[in-house]
Amino acid sequence: MNIKSQDKAAITNSPLTTIIEDCAKSIINAQKGTGEIPWAIGEKTDSWDMVEAIMGLNICGYFQESKKGFEWLKKTQNSDGSFYASYMNGSPEDMTKDTNMSSYIAVGLLQYLIITKDLDFTRYIWPTVEKGLNFVISLQAEGGEIYWAKSPKGNIDKMCLLTGSSSIYTSLKCGIYLGEKLGFDYPHWKTAAIKLENALRKRRHVFDVTKSRYSMDWFYPILCGALTKNECEKRLEKYWKKFIVEGMGVRCVSENPWITMAETCELVLALNSMGKKRKAEIVFNWILDRRFEDDGSFWCGFTFPDMVIWPEEKYTWTNGVAIMAADALYDLTPASNLFSHAFWEQKSTWRYLN
Image 1 (cartoon, rainbow, N blue to C red):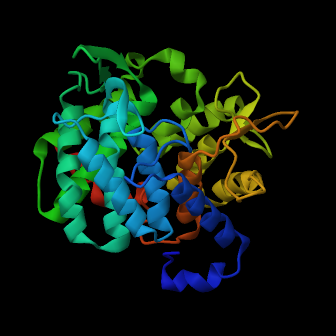
Image 2: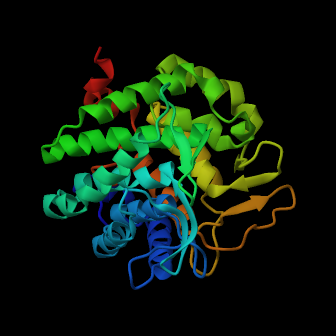
């Protein structure tokens, strides 16, 4: 496992070490020889969730496997910089060109560089990031929000998703910073990020309100760092009881008695990004035993109060984000602060351009 030397003593022989390793092995077990990482064995693949799995591998030091994943993404990307919404065994399944899925590789590649300091491979994958972000910006509305997708026929679907646009904001930040590390400057990316930040803060009405029942719509604007500290605090408090089941985790959808591990771990990232480490640790500890007995990987979710594991698939992205939550909380790698608001306050000086 790739753990910073100063932290090894703190987690040696810790149950968390075994949990993280089990999660990584579950991802590797699902990875195909081509490098593709599907949702689970026999399931579809999408580029966003695949990057989430790759990031888990990076944290655990499985760089050969993560590089194969990046190479698959590079080969699979469309010429216009987009990725299709889903693939099955390497072939397009849903040929919708999704903006959020086309941008997230920027986050994974920056994390890889911070952990490995491997400039050569980063430069090799960089054109994929560049094309992906340019495709996303081409679907930005005048008000700053990002349209969801292009249809297989090339028509722009002008629905705007709050969760997706928040994730794209993170991708733009990472792309800008990664470009600077490689010696590139993209003023149009900075302008796009500033406009998107304004939309996330002040134009909430342009986003699809029907998605507000999903917990991601609650905490992704916090996680991405677009909101002010005061706005984050208010948003966190306003919807806490709507989505949180104390002692269990985060509901995926507000009205359903269904806790999901991925959303719970992403909330851990959001809380920690605000500096609420103790609260994040408490939430993370709620789910540490929600794992399969045979391989130690995390359940996707469970219903309550009957405690039925559902669905039963072992999802790579669930285990990827569980590893990311552990890294954020316990500083396992040099990239542990990748989602920290304090980190980005220092790096995102372009936010204050006139």
